[in-house]
Length: 195
Figure 1 (tube, one colour):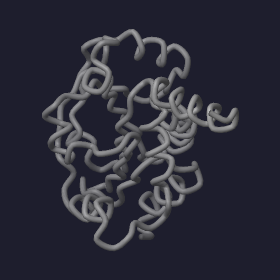
Figure 2 (cartoon, helix red, strand yellow):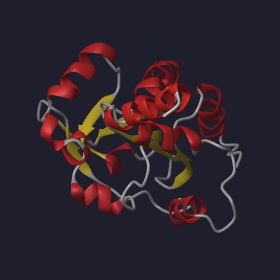
Figure 3 (cartoon, helix red, strand yellow):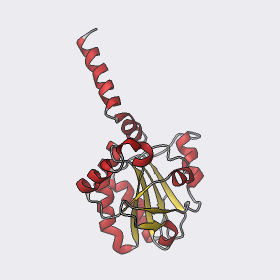
Figure 4 (cartoon, helix red, strand yellow):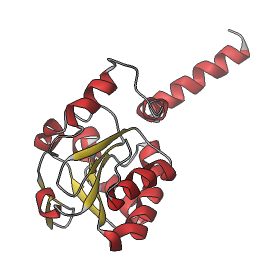
């Protein structure tokens, strides 16, 4: 086997072993428009303009939060797991957005999927993540019921921007730069939803 081919094979194997495949899949899915009829487009249409599925979830300390109690605020619900590379990259962005707009009726709610995606890790990965990133917003523990209510959450990260009436204004399939989130958040806060 040629050295270049061996190196490429080793890189692919390392990516699989390190869990980069979901990260690569998510990173590849950040194009602004889904192809007509694609699974992504069907998923987005399933939720956009409809009431966000309600949930009550707890954080790692047992404190609970109910989504419907946030009605009147613009909320970004972000599904993620601790070892997801794009999830880790977007956490500082979400933290900055939460800090910048929380005084204007905006809130980020993170739903951690470690128990469902990497159950063998227990809460160890989540605790390390929380210590490293110290997000200023609620991090809740996902359940199968919530996962099912949100269509199985086919990619991580995935975020749902929920308007003041509790309807899904936009579904962000994969990780996005802060400017993309901010434009949609500002439009909701200003009442000029740009779609």
